[in-house]
Length: 113
Image (cartoon, rainbow, N blue to C red; front, side, top):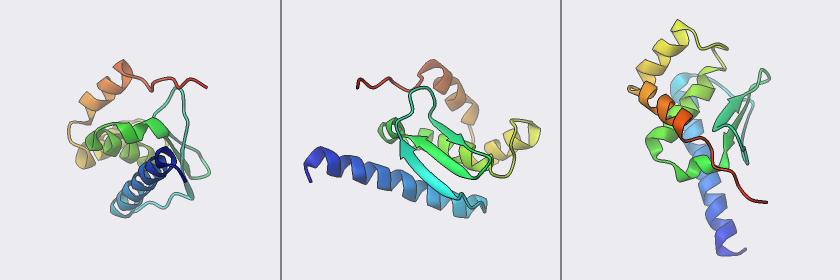
């Protein structure tokens, strides 16, 4: 394998390990964790328990990665963005609101195919 592919695989592995660590901490069990190209979102959570994370998340600071990962994992417990969801976000990722604002300003970059 060439270096860019190995680098990408190690980034994917790191995101999956980070997600697994947060899963244990939050006491949730995603059915599948995928790292894939996502053009408009940093992450998503399906009703079937599938967590999808953008490949571009690997290029962001660890604190922002935690924000996205915790946000999606909490949706396994709480499906909306109500008061309970927001209070759990604050408990696990203090200062998350600033990162949420940053997410809105700096969306996922678009890859050229």
